[in-house]
Length: 340
Image (cartoon, rainbow, N blue to C red; front, side, top):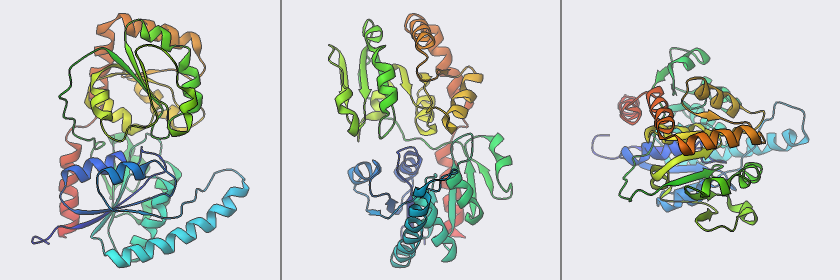
C-alpha cells in the first residue's frame, strides 16, 4: 500500500450537499478516486470538471409515506445494488466513502457484502433515512457535532466536523450578496427572494444561483447577476459576500462558517432543514426565516444591511460552532482504515 495510491470510491449525489464533503477530502488526500452518482443529479458536471471518473447508477428513494413511487423505486434500488456489485468487483476499492444520499445506499450494501470498509458521514443535525439504512454496514460513522454521537452505535462514531474545501481567495473585495438554493436551485425560494432583490441592490451587487431549471426566474436589474449553476468558483464568490442567503443544507452552512459569513437560512418547509436552521438560529449563528414570511425577511435584511457588527457577530458565532481540522481528522481516519 505504501508503494501505490489507495483506491477509494466516493458515493453520493442527487443534490450537491452530499458531494461537497467528499470532494473536500479528495482534494487533500492522495488516492485514485471513482465517483458513483445518480443519472440526473447536478453532481456529474462538478465531478467531470475535476477529471475524476464518474459512474452513474440507478437510484431510488424510499419515502416514509404511501406512494406508488416507492414500488417503482424499490426495483431501482435492487438494480443499483447489482450495478454496485459489478463496479466494486471490477475496481476493487480499498474504501467506500459517502456523506449520505439514496444513491449511496446500494453501494454501501454491496461494499459490506464484499468486505470493503465503508465510512458514512453524517452532516445534518437530524439523521436521514439514507444514513439510517447505511449506518449498520459502516466500519466508521463520522459526525459533524458531538451531540450526534447518540444517534448511532457509539463504538463506531468519530466526531470530525464537516470537511470543507480549501478556499484560495485572490479576489478583490466588493460588497455583494449571494443567494443560492443549492446545486439544483430552489424555485419557490427564488420566487420568495425576488421581491427583496431591489432592497439588497440599494447597497450590494446581488449574485443569484437560480438552478438549471429555473432560468426563467432571472430578474432584470443593474448589478444583479443570475447563474444557472456554478461548477467552479463558488467558494471564491462566497468569500466575497457580506451576506449569504440560502437553503439550510449543511455543506453550504459549513462553507459559510469557514468564511465567518453572515447567513440567512430559508429551510425547505417541513423538512430536516428546519432542524438545521433552528439549531444555528438558537446559537445566534445564523438568521432563520421561514419561506413566505415577508415582513420578517424584510426586517432582518434591513438590520443586516445597516449593521456591520451584527453581520460579523453572526459569522464569528457560526465559525466557533464547528469543530476545526475536519479534513486532517479525515485523512488520519482514512489512513488508519486502509493501512489496517
